[in-house]
Length: 445
Image (cartoon, rainbow, N blue to C red; front, side, top):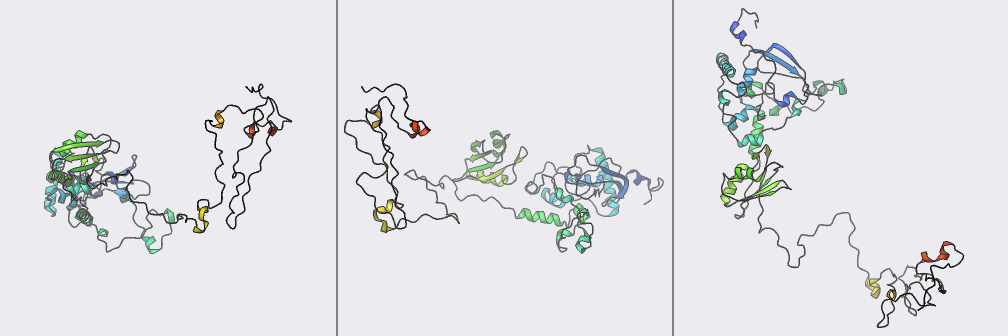
């Protein structure tokens, strides 16, 4: 193309000369200190075939270099990114956005009419604030659509900036190894519709395989069916956060019908909205499921549970939940003792019984409450065996007979000494040669 000032002077004056491109967050990358190369009139636009300023940059580490593909005039007409040609507000293809907002594409495709239309739109963009959309997209910001709320991408998708697949690695001839800037992965199926994408078809919104895939996903999305119990008029609203209040929920749900109550559960960040009529609850659920956004938060909508379907507590106060299933690999319950044991069934291992307690005389209190023992009382350790004169039954076959513990000889209590009740109180235990007086003499009165 001739670039002299004397040739095609009018079109030369309308060539684009910008300082920064119009990009989406995904194409721009996550690096805030990005460096770009600027080439004035470097290439011609893929749509209007006019020279424009080309920017080239790398979005981040281990990503491929990207550049602008269309001029800013064509991008502002459709409100799309100059590189990926996706909508700047929703991150969707133009075909999906136009189908959701019911926008008719008025841009001509012939060369002469396209140039005339582009010049008129560029004049309209110059006279506008440069931010609001022009032409058929002037009312896009005020329109709402269920498809856009469900399919819109709210966060950047940096996986789209990955390098291309190394063709030498596919052939088995790549010698760079880990230093290769391209991906060493298996390529996609060539018969896959996503492998055949055209930039002009995406811009004009026709025959876009990515748009067809997204629209099929929207038609196959699940819907929230109303419960069979007609008495349920309560909706569960989740993911409220800390800023949403009861007034915000009432301001949104009052348009569907009369609200009986709104119960806020701050700890769980949820609420229960109860309507007076079932028809109002169904309308609110249909209009709000997977599309309700209040205060920048996408809220979860579900139906409340029926009180009649909840299990009623038992009369005896016991829990009526179903028993847990046994965990595989754990040992089961022990079997009962054999019947041949007879009376020994309760004492399978032949252990000694509880200590034998001698009955007290009527009118006498417990031994610990009768004061100090009288003089001459001989302290004996507690008896843990059977009463004198009683013999233990023979042990089961294969077990050694149990013997009673050895008995220490009783220690006579001398006058003026404290009785020894515990082994730690025995002075001879610590290596003393004999007994030592502890305190004063003990009175016998």
